[in-house]
Amino acid sequence: MILRDAVRVLVANWDGSYTVPSRRLYPHQWSWDSAFIAIGNARWSPRRARIELLSLFGAQWRDGRVPHIVFNPAVPEGAYFPGPEFWQAHAPGGSATSGIVQPPVHALAAWKTHLAEPDPAFLRRIYPRLVAQQEFLRAARRSPEGLISIVHPWESGMDNSPAWDLPLRAVRRDTVGFVRRDLATVSAEERPTDRDYERYVSLARAYRDSAYRAPGEFQVECPLFNAAYGVAESTLARIAQVCGLDPEPHEREAAAITEAMVEHLFDGGLFQARDVRTGRLLHSSSTAGLTPLMLPHLPDEVAEALIGSTLDRFAFKDGALPSYSPAALDFDPARYWRGPSWINLTWLVWQGLKDRRPDLADLVAEGMVNSVARSGFREYFDPFSLHGHGSHDFSWSAALLLDVVAEHGLDGLPASGREVGQEPGGLGEPDDVGDHVLT
Ligand code: 2M8
Image (tube, rainbow, N blue to C red; front, side):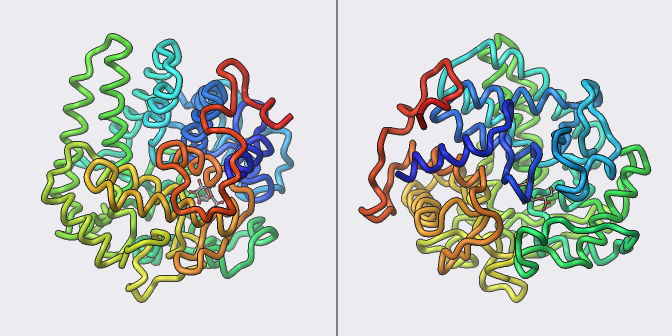
């Protein structure tokens, strides 16, 4: 039942060549959403996963950046703010896009898609685009310390994280006429405040007005973003091998970023963000700080410390992994990215725990299955009650559930939820986009 329902959400959110994160709240294509969605689609329709990724990279800019939103021209301007008229940006192929980026989890998605159904031709096609995505980050965003920075909280994907409160306070608020669309769908208590939105808009406008070149009043090195960048290099090494190319430069880059992160972002218990403008660490209790567990070259003692933090600081025994430590004063179990559990963030930590602590990884997987079984494919969940928040029928919650169940099974799910019609993997045929499973 739960698997079939997950596929149903993904089919309903499919727009012909990609999947919207949510029909009402996010009616266009989002960059890292598409990567997570491809990972789930690979479990029932690898072809759909390939199309999802290739359509996103079809909007890659000449400088290699992959925009965080690719707009659907058929959707009215007023359906999402800030829309194409605000961003005033276009990909070489003509698609209207935003001009900022999101964490580069796409190489991992391409690799997992290939593992689900080996397709060297797909890897050969996407490899140069994935390399260009990394090159943009090196050229435009790398500090002398060797770390990659982001210039807007939206680039972190964890937009409203308390980790950004301090640097965001220094940003001028822009109140020049805009209307938030998100509050028409989701209650204000579950979304960022108006003050935060005014700063988001001001930063995006300034970056746009510099032709998307000059970092403005916000420039930070985020541990999740840098971990994603490092994992992308390790994954590109594997992809290069399949393509008959030299994996070595990617291996070297993965080792180098890991070393730089340990040297500059690790506080002994957790990875922290760093403010590039002041050079100071932005101490917080964000779960982003656990995601470097994914890095294959992470020294064992650092990984041990992170696992210790998962158990102590995040008080993780079972249940859902929060996005921010419940012990922290600025924790909020219901507000977007300030504490609720998110399936994609939990999935990233799960990747890092599978080899190092399979017992803990199993509990984390159960938490994801349980959250969805309890409240449906919601955008985020109260980490204690598992009550759902944000939008309904949210694509990456459905997609990653398929991935978790394919690997972990349905442990954690009460017997009443186990009426699964078909095995994962058996849901779609290799050469269609999978829609027939519902007919
Ligand atoms: C949220 O971000 C968008 C802006 O990009 C928004 O609030 O309007 C974040 O959760 C982000 O990580 C996600 O990619 C996006 C679409 O799901 O929504």
